[in-house]
Image (cartoon, rainbow, N blue to C red; front, side, top):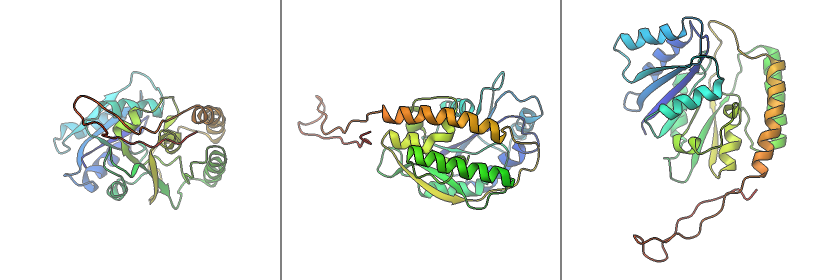
Length: 258
């Protein structure tokens, strides 16, 4: 499967150039169709690092899309995914803590879009490199979210994922959807898989989120996602008939019945 790697970045100078170069080094050229960096209104050298890589001519398919002002990670992801030309998307955070070496392994667990099997493969960080307070906050958030949503996701905050572009674009969009993709994919009848991945230390810059801010936003979003899941109905289609199909031709899809 040919893939597009989408990387949202906000003030990630010192990280983004290295991450893009690593992606081209470790994802096979036969698999990698393009890399799209979405600069979410940075005021540092983030876009210049990407422009330099584009100019050197050694990174085919590398593209830069810039937002006029910061709009949030989910919005940046959707900008890149909408612009992508591949049926499969891989995403990573722009801070370099995700390891592009994990992408080929995640792809091995992804079903071909439109066939039975996982439409989303979510990374699962085995050894977190963040501070103790962030690890504690992440563990607590995952437990609370799973208690409410029952999506069985051990690490919803992991930025490295691979999934069907079409399935993503059919989901309802809100500004924190990237934190709830496993639950949303399941809500719309898709299988989801979780695969262990590497986690690395940030080499430059600082995190854009505090534990307090993330907790407040997360609680607000959790209520909304819980409501959305309960109000969503995905029908099971048992038969479709048209002039171009013989009578009795059937097309099946599974819903979650919620």
